[in-house]
Image: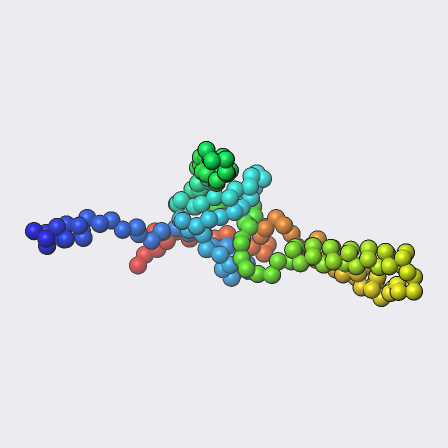
Length: 183
């Protein structure tokens, strides 16, 4: 009896198969990211909509998404907790994606540029205060260094685009239909 029960449970157990279709984000024919069912994706569509959702399925050039509405709600004790208020389901063709935002661990140019800009501005203000208070202690080299840091920070933060990786010349999306690949 135990063997029959074990065999019945073993063969009736359903497992999740590997997802078939996926999308590659490539930069000059080198794969940067792979998106498939179960992944999280953040992108902007060609119509300007900003989507931050989970991929539920990719099939026939279409990405099926589910986006959750998470808000802080008060409890009976007067504290706030995060709760899922609802969700939306979307579907987009993969070629309707204008830009993709990736969360990777590379160097963040926009944050570094803002830090340099702020630090340079503080050095320039401090040099101005020293000039007004005690002109003998004033250092024009420190003022020039502050101006140089602020200018470098401005140029770095201006050069780093905050709109993600725009699909076009440098980046491209490639749809891979693995269900039609013959083995």
